[in-house]
Image 1: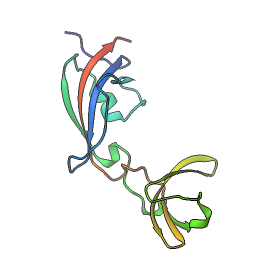
Image 2: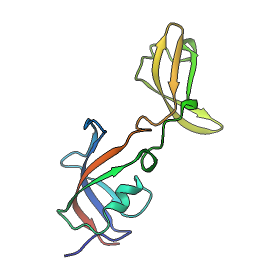
Image 3: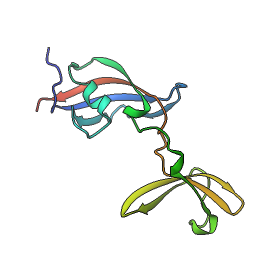
Image 4: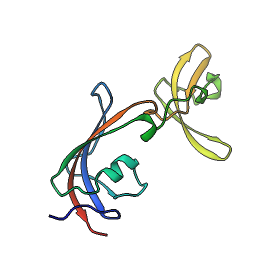
Length: 141
C-alpha cells in the first residue's frame, strides 16, 4: 500500500478541537484541506503527521501551544481610546493594523467606557490543539 512521503500533495478531512473538546475549525465534507506534506504550508505537526499515512488512515494529532500558535504574550494586549477605532466596533471584532511595516490582526477583547483593549495574540495562542484527521487522497511528488 502506498503511503505519503515528504513533498506529496495530500488531501485531509479534519476537525480541530480545543482542550475542552470545543470545535474551533473543521474541513467541509466536499472541500478537504490540501497541502504539501512535510512543508511549512500549515502547522508542522499536521504537515509532518501525515507522512507515512495511507488513504483512509485516521490519526489524532495533539499540538502544544509551542507547536501550534505559541504561548499568549501579555505584552501584545494594549488599551487604546475607542475614538481611535472604526465607528461601531464591538468586542470580538477583528481589526487590521501595522507595526513596523508588518501587517497584524488585532482582536477587540474588551470595551470599557472610552477605552478598548486590543490583543495581537493569535486567537488560538496558549491553547493545546487536537486535530482528528483522515487522509482522503494524495498525489506523489
